[in-house]
Amino acid sequence: MSGLASRSQLRMSFARYALVTVPLVLLLGILSGRAAGSGYGNPWFDALIKPGIMPPGWVFAVTWTILYILLGFALAAILHARGARGRGAALALFGAQLLLNFAWSPLFFAFHKVEAALVLIVAILALSVATTFLFAAIRKGAALLMLPYLGWLCFAAVLTADINALNPQAETLVPGEASADIAL
Image (cartoon, rainbow, N blue to C red; front, top):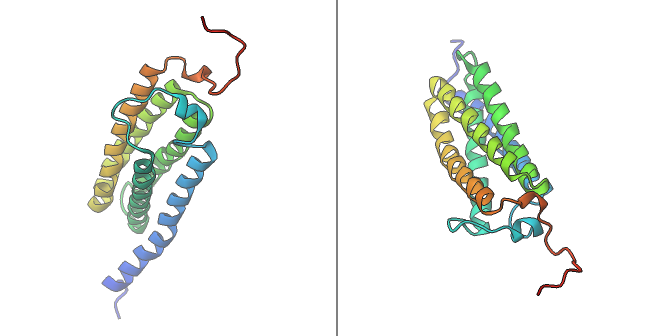
């Protein structure tokens, strides 16, 4: 009997990784957004002037769900590539960009730091591009799974930049605040 694993054993090994990574990435992403009060329904966000290219709220929920699932599968593919050269660096970069990704919603939606969120999303994009290149050297399929995420990050960066430009005082905006001022 050979010491090599059969194709079905290899598929099962990948499936075991994916059974952990996909729900974990998805759950952490959802928790990050919920904890920060992300999206429409957040009074501060609702009060912001939005760019014309801003999609409806449901688009964000659907898109991020799909992206987190794809990221979970990409992570599983790299975890499955035991012994691959550069695997440790790829996993470290993936973890770093994912942690920054999870920090974006609280920074933007909870702390109202639009400029800082713009800088952060550019950093996330840079780390994600580097991660994708490292993934490509290990598993091309994992790199391909990163491409929709990169595209969405570019779009999200444009949205953040537009919101920043349209709302220069976003950090101080307090919707529904009572005022004793009389408009003349």
